[in-house]
Image 1 (cartoon, rainbow, N blue to C red):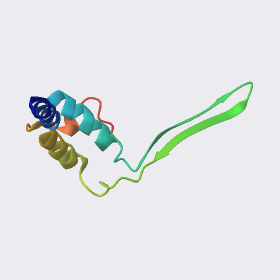
Image 2 (cartoon, rainbow, N blue to C red):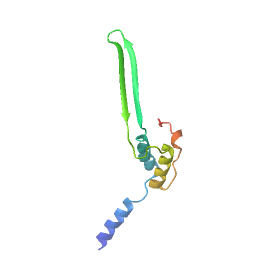
Image 3 (tube, helix red, strand yellow):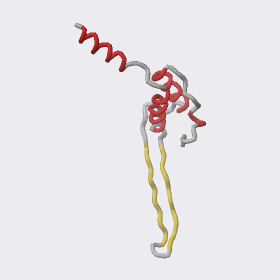
Image 4 (cartoon, rainbow, N blue to C red):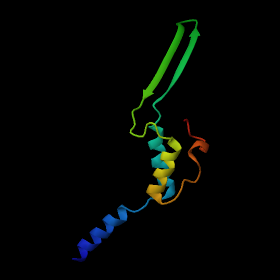
Length: 97
């Protein structure tokens, strides 16, 4: 009987809130996937190959499309940790929105 209670307590603890830092990391990854189009393009010329070009394009179809990424991020962090993010999404130095 006490084993079942211990297992149940462990399962309930696993469903609890995560740290704000962990929630921010998970939620940031989620909003990065919301960007419908992202990528890089490089073009140049050299004496051996002439004109050179390269395009790396990523297309994404997210269920969160059409929503403000900042609102999605704030809501996600709050739902996971019970706290608001430590800083707004758009002020993060790593945000490439």
